[in-house]
Length: 481
Ligand SMILES: Cc1cc2nc3c(=O)[nH]c(=O)nc-3n(C[C@H](O)[C@H](O)[C@H](O)COP(=O)(O)O)c2cc1C
Image 1 (cartoon, rainbow, N blue to C red):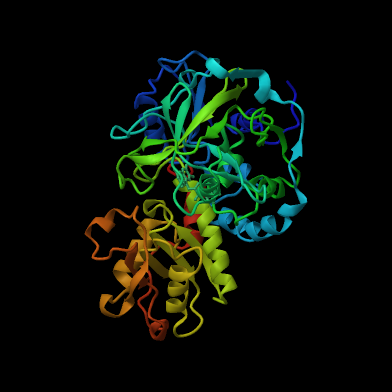
Image 2 (cartoon, rainbow, N blue to C red; image 1 turned 90 degrees about the vertical axis):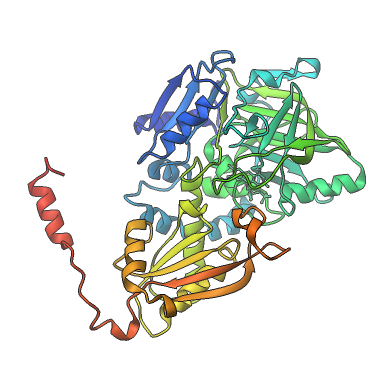
């Protein structure tokens, strides 16, 4: 069926296939095997996107896609940005965009259409069967099978009607029930609380697959009361087309692959988790979470579920988070008046929160500390910011080898590490088990790994091959390089 929906996953997959970044995988078991393949894949340099079919225990054609956002060119394509030659150039291309998207979002209300590929198949009432759709066991100590990881949960505010779209993990309980894990403070959680207070059923629609832009944006902090669907419209410079669920009237992209629709009835909850998390640890145990009764399933023929499991980084979505957060941090530094910021990188090893690096061209005494403290404490950076490192402009912040070389050779630990006490932490910090605080606090370090400002003129010269010489020999001895 032809579709004008710009969030059609299949149109995006065709473009990615043309780039040579799509691989097929047949016959894996959803019980850890599929996950293991994905996790090994994502640790490769420039990993392809993986499309799993013939998944053991599931009907052929009921597919899973992983690693969708894990390469430079795929992420650029998802964000509708031109091709980029480096992570840093992608960060720079992205830097001003979130402000523009936010300002323009009001112009792009979704367009409601009557039908779309998502309505090709409809299950309702007793026919609803979640077991038809692959719900992998992603890591061996997970408390269950998770059908929603790279998903988008659509909900509506009881008072204002604002449509929120958030990525929250979804555990399958049985053929028509799933558990939703919404951390307190997340917009979906706030909306749900209002329905609980009013003792009303909470309407929910869960999009399990669409163009990865959908889940990329539902997985980042879009401002309160701004719908992610409008924000996505601003990225695309056109409104998305949505259909409305038969039961709840909630909108979802008309070319969605699979949508679960239903209600969380007052008081319905059950144990959910544990689930391997983005820093690479199990930091929680099974605990009660809202349960949704799925009363409709809409799906395309041969539906594709997007999987995006967390695990020890690099994981399925750590690269995209690094790029998005690096762009936000870059903007925050510049907007705070820090001059000559060269580049910023929020490292995957720290879940793009715990280990962030900025490179600057030092202009004045104190410039490096200023950049480091603002990187550590700015609005988008302060949560869980354990280490913030400042390096000179000759160091690539995204290259850990270079960053650690700068730390090893350009610091005097006694004077170059500033400690901040009782900063913003999190209960999902694995170190919280050992902390003395009852609140989510942590200490932080700002590491000034720049050459000392007053010794810029006499600091020992770096021993390295000049870029010109590198180019010359690479060109001349192509077969060697
Ligand atoms: C793959 C992935 C899984 C996530 N899982 C959860 C989750 O289970 N619960 C949660 O509260 N946030 C989760 N997040 C983070 C939220 O999606 C993110 O904070 C987002 O801003 C929430 O939307 P909201 O701001 O509209 O509440 C996840 C993010 C990603 C990318």
